[in-house]
Amino acid sequence: MIKLRAAGLTDIGRVRRNNEDRFLCDPEAMFFGVADGVGGLPGGAEASERTLQEVQLQLKAHLGRSLPNLEKIVHKTNEAVQELGQEISPDMGIASTLTFGHIRGRTLHLAHVGDSRAYMWRNGRLAALTSDHSVENEAKARRARGEKIFFHEVNRNALTRCMGQPTPPEPDLLAHEIEAGDRYLFCTDGISRLVNDAELEEILGRPLDPEPLLRDLIALALRRGGPDNATGVMIYIDAVE
Image 1 (cartoon, one colour):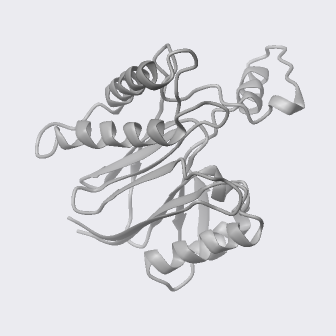
Image 2 (image 1 turned 60 degrees about the vertical axis):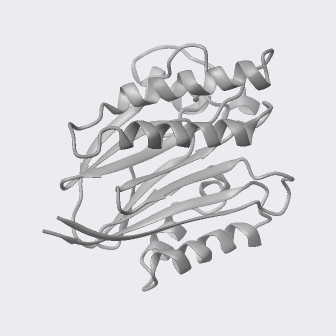
C-alpha cells in the first residue's frame, strides 16, 4: 500500500497571453502528468486539455482491472488530439507534449512524448526519468549509433515527437520501483528551461509540503522572467507498505 501526498500548480508566466499548459493530479487514483501545447501551432490549450482528458479517461477504464497498456493509451490519445485538430485547425493541426505516470502497487508506470519532463528525488539526489524528444537529442542518439547527423543550432530544441502528429508517436516507457521518501516532479519546460538540475535538487529536498514547494519552484521561474507557462505536479511518497 502506498501513502502519498501530491499537488499540481500552473502559472501563465509573465509573457504569454494564454496558458497552454495543463496538469493531471489525482492522488486517489494515483494518476499524474503534465501536457504543454506546442508553440507555433494554433489551439495549444485545446491540445493539452484534450490530451490529459483522454489519458485520464483511458486510465480510469483500467482501475481495479488489468495494468493499462500505456503505449496504447498514448496512441488513442494521439488519435483524439488529431480529431480535435481537424475540427479547429484542419490546415495545421494541433499538438501537445505529454508526460504522465500511474502508480500501481510499488511501481510508477511512466509514458513520455515531447519535452515536458519527469524527475525523481531520492536520498538527496536528483535523477531525470525522461529525455526530451528534441532534434538535438535525436541527433546525439543517432551519432552514438555511428550515423553522420547534422542540425542547425536554431532547431536544436524543436520537437521530434508530439501528441497530435499524423503517425502515432513512439512513447518512452518506464516501469520505476518507488521507495518511501521518494519525491517525483512532472513539469513543463517553463520550469525545466529556467531551473537547472542542481537547483532542482536543492528545492525538491526542502522540508515543505508539495504545494508550497511547487510555489517556490514556479516563483523562481517567474523571477527569471517567466517567458513561458510554468506547470508542475509534485508527489511525495510517504510510505510503501
